[in-house]
Image 1 (cartoon, helix red, strand yellow):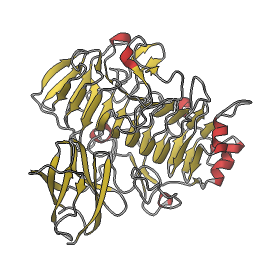
Image 2 (cartoon, rainbow, N blue to C red; image 1 turned 90 degrees about the vertical axis):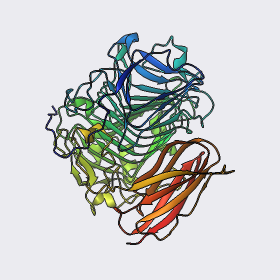
Image 3 (tube, one colour; image 1 turned 135 degrees about the vertical axis):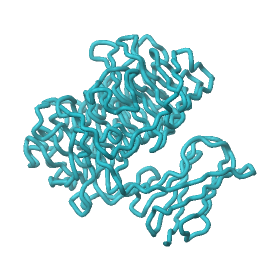
Image 4 (cartoon, one colour; image 1 turned 60 degrees about the horizontal axis):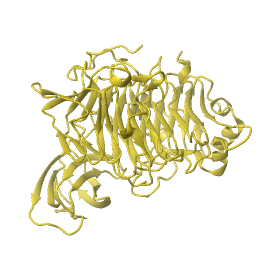
Length: 548
């Protein structure tokens, strides 16, 4: 069992001491309304609370939302219905926290670390396509009699909003036998939705589950959840990068349970997500948790790509691929190229660190060998499940994780990095996750502090644009200007030459107009940097030089 030993250097999530408590029921986010939840209040979900079709919910950085306890139809959860939108955009310093009513978020030791099932979770539903019939389905975790629980459609670019820098804790109540609510459930969510920097901690069921859809995700943390870490089904086809799993030493199932379809199993489009730079740590090479014996269970005609990833510390084997006597199966997807595992590192398996032990089926072992998978120690800095600061999933610089990787697709979504796994030199979980708050993960002293001041300019631009910073080169300050033709979500970030994010300058919704950001990079080293603007569905990149 994990024990609580508070670390001395912990980044606590701030909360206003005198916050008002506001109870939220299902009548509070009605169709065609715009609701804002602010960080100076604490919100209590009483039952299933829907963001109705046509409604929007904006949640400010640092806001705490709690769910009341209750099983069955009395479960508490936030559900974004098809046609509704959520704009939950926290920051690394002020994440948005969803947790149980009993949780004092100012005290990371007030609940047992393994407390699960204290409330429901978060469910986002959209209009993207599925491979099941009839093309829309009631989402699991809420009663099938609820019409707002339907998901699926024909709009693969559907936009359900923004969900970033969010920590979801201690959820997973039952609504019926074997039907628990996942930490974050995504049903038919489209690629117009932004989901990144999301942690699910100690959920009773899965951490994350996708039912069809095309949403792309980055920087996901599934920590100590009671069932699977990442689960997909019904033809999920999104992109993923920087996914991290740490499993409990006594409870939890697969790191990845991947199904293709249900009715019918050979339905199209096939489940073919493309996941780069994952790090999956199991229950322990010598763990007694027999449920967590395999990294990946791929079945029901599922495909998918795992590239440049690390799989380690599991009690038995690495991968099991469905191979039926007849009909479509996941072996067929592998042989057709819809399922591929390339340039990954496998290490620390109870069954043995040999190819035949990691992949007992010969056709899977042959596939791994032919696609530059390696059985080698990734040399992670530390694996721990206690609050001792010992969990540091960054690989040692110069080790095996810094070689043997495949090129990253240059498609505007993936970030090109020079390492295998979810982490390079930067511990991107720092500050906003419960893992960091409770002192489970190490403290990364190298995270740069960059000061930015944003101001609005007069005039209404006719297009989206990002200007070259001035002066350039600079030391240590410079100004970056950008223009928005329409109101909406804006992200302006700075990256180093390795593609690692070093600063967030702008994050959140902005009105149409022109803006400038004054950047003070006193804590960054000299060198070339890139800054990237995402706005209006477009991505703009420019270079700048810091000379000290």
